[in-house]
Image (tube, rainbow, N blue to C red; front, top):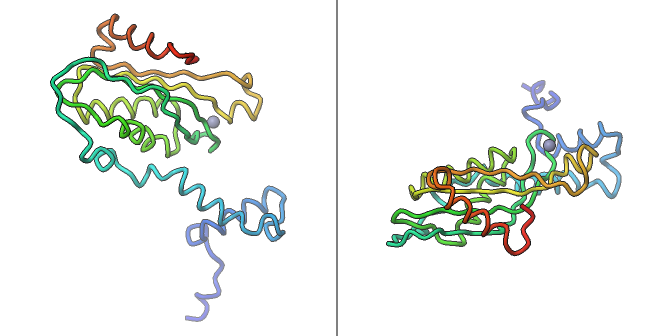
Amino acid sequence: MAIETMEAPTLESASMQDLYRELIRRLGENPERDGLLRTPERMEKSMAYLTRGYGQTVAEVLHGALFDVDYDEMVIVKDIEFFSLCEHHLLPFFGKAHVAYVPQGKVIGLSKTARLVDVFARRLQVQERLTREISDAIEEAIRPQGVAVILEAQHLCMMMRGVEKQHSHTVTSAMLGVFKTQMQTRNEFLSLVRSHGSGV
Ligand SMILES: [Zn+2]
């Protein structure tokens, strides 16, 4: 029926770009002016990129990247840069992840550890859950003797809104297995993370 084609788009049927155009309008701007004309298109693309973790799984990232080993020394990957979006304000938080585990027959290829962090960072997050999701994913993938994850991050939602001091870092950690039960293992990890000028 002709009348159906006349109906205005509903919230559900509107395109992402329509929604961004409306958002820009409600902020008091003119989405038709030159500088803003292609902004909805750019926002859609950048938001898809910043949340691409929703389309990824740990299994596919780690596929072919788990290796059998017969040593049980601590594996540590420091200073993994990450960028995420806080789920409360959709503003960035970003910083460094330090990941360690004591293997029990299996290790993860080094470059894949960074990609694993990205799977969870590229979603709407809170720092505590991100920390936990990384440690749990490693635990599940290789069943090590223990996993430790520390994230140091700066949150633009605090910095830009003046909630916290400009340079304050938020530090979160998750300690599983031997990192929880053996103080010596935990301390070894912490001193390795602290060396080379890390701000933890
Ligand atoms: Zn926030």
